[in-house]
Length: 411
Ligand SMILES: [Zn+2]
Image 1 (tube, rainbow, N blue to C red):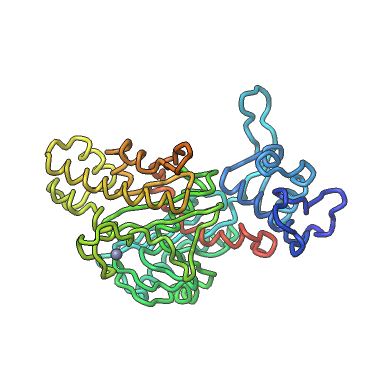
Image 2: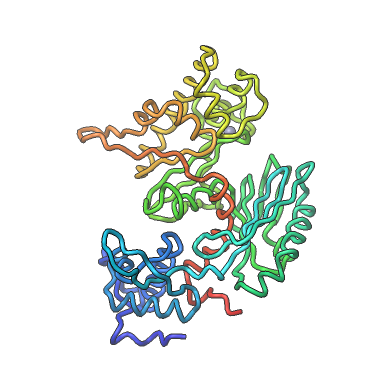
């Protein structure tokens, strides 16, 4: 352990950003912890970086970066790694990367499968197992299946890795304590999943909504990497979910389930929603009607892209256009309310973006009174299968990324 008071040579307490508010209540120790967290998050999301690059990206001086990196090396949270020098011939320089033997279990609960991936710090998937189910599992059954999948990985984990915990993504409303308040697709209600699973597998378990977790991982590893303010919306047969990342942090709201953008009312005389209101965004913009017009029961995202690219039937084209118009109205409202730098559309909404990019791009163009219109970047999520595998692990890594010294696994 590095002596935290060793600050004469290496100013570990150098502030990251020029102070804009009084720092009277911020101790050097707080600033050092924040700087360690910033450096670890940086190499976690970006891969191997030289110390010079870490300095350039954080604004910290060379000696501070050197000291912070040494402390993370001592904690075995980063390791030395070679870094390609871009644009210049010569040998690669020595940098640091996240230590991928520090791992988390990444668990996805879905109506017809449970999957568990072993994910290293930095996002590498070391192994993955999946168990298919004939029907949605009860919470008890889910815990049994998850536990036996993890038992199969246990020897490998004990031999090669240091485990920080497990993260679980659930399609449903999840509060801060890890209780699933409601998951219509799994048929769960008021289930303290974090406690049940911690008891079953014996490690700390964090539980989150699958779409919110998707938003988080998209800003760390995906299309919104390096963007601090992002609105993420994902559509599927289950409805529309979302996540709002402001200043790099996921907005959770009072009870932990902010981001229910799917229940924004866009048509007061529209169809009834599962929440009891009429005309929510997720009933007005939904793949079911489009699939019915195409004569299909189920299509994955890639298949739907192809079908809608080829469709000539005017009724189908009109239905897609109607849904795009409704989505446009909602996006204009969200963008004016939250002023994100980027809007990311995932799943079915990504399909709609591919069919009507110009219409939706116009919807997110801000027209503040008396000012030039500012363009908000509109992107389709990169997240396909790979990012979804690692997304739940981010929940488990979060405490470590926030406070590396306190949370570093000791085993
Ligand atoms: Zn609703």
